[in-house]
Image 1: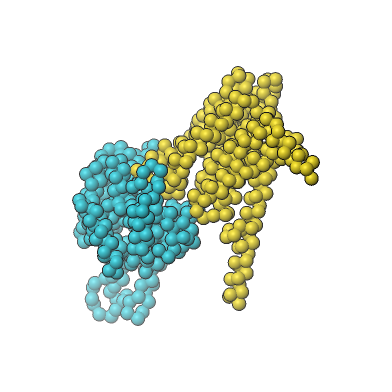
Image 2: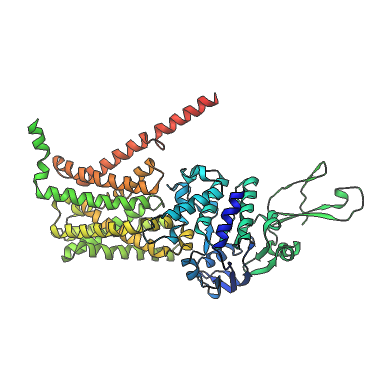
Length: 299
Length: 289
């Protein structure tokens, strides 16, 4: 653990002026005429973990694409650390951790090769790794606890290990802004905790993390800020203010299940308080005392 | 014994045979280089479509006495424009569109060749004729192969990142669109070059088989390229050599050799081969019992 804090202090030194994202009145219309995001605005400061929350098709991936210059805004703009997107990308400011489904796990590359890809932006045009590059790769692998697996083909890893490899790549890249696309899909609780721990360390060193997720339960745990999307920004700001039941119901409309447990269904006294469960799972299992309650759809 | 040896070195005594072997090896090498990428993206059949689509261009070039590469270039553009147009205007699936456009153009090429049989030989285009390759064609093929090789040596890692994870490639400031355009331009150019050696029908093998074989032999992309290129060069050189004794059909010999090596890897590859997999399963069952 000491080694971890040590490396993170070194990384922190290289981030003198922190990361920031500024999205102003962003609209993105695709070639087929579909407007995926309309008039979206939010500002994020250094040392922040921000959740990007919304249903499928709410524009989460479009926002990511706009930050990486994949799509051009039809109106408004995106500034990263005060720079335009292309300039920021050239300076290796943005690191991207892909969704597991988007990766070809049969691709013939080893773990260490993937992490080395994070260094390519720092190398000359021939992409010949220097000793410093190798050191950064070793360090990144060590930090996510994947050093023992460096010679494995990426498809041979478990879901959590795969995720850690791509996190190591973003560490090796030394991007100040890290975009994580659904990082908790298909991984176990232990890996989730480890990833969240790492994100917190990065936050302490001034990084800015934007996490697209539909894993609502863990958002208040580790996110300082939340941007709620539904084709535009419904609400953005500190988690405590934005991540409310009313806002979430607005963001998810009828998509989420909304269970209310309380009153005489649960206990014999007249305590009127209720437990509300918002979930995209069809039948969540809820324990109350020693009794198991079947989720009853409150709608 | 010396008589047999003498017999075996006969092809090296003929200028046209030497030319055929070296040109084949060069083309086999660059095609194999590109095959390492092509087979990973599920685009393998694109090579086939391309090779068939450029046939009318090559035929037109021969009829007009122009360099065949120029005719192929225009036919290639026509093919991709045609595919895009049909795809936009109809709801047909991509494979149907590719199949439709490339067969139409191939048929047009065959038609042109049968109308002007004196200037174009169908056999040359469809089956290739490296043994009778003209000197100016050798120059064209050498330029295509040389330039492709040079560019690929510089961009192979950037292409690897682009093909593996395009988002990441963007995030490190690579122009992925440009890289893909370069790749497909090189692929088209090499398809044209391969047309000369193995013919339109077998080009697909040149841009798929070596990469597919190497894929079974290693998990490191850098090694995969080296193995693939080595296989491409060796099979093409030896194939051209053997074809001297079999009297023609160079393309058939080269591709047969490549297939034999693929089969060998398929069964005997140390990690991904059939036998290795079976042995692993046996050990696992024994361990469980």
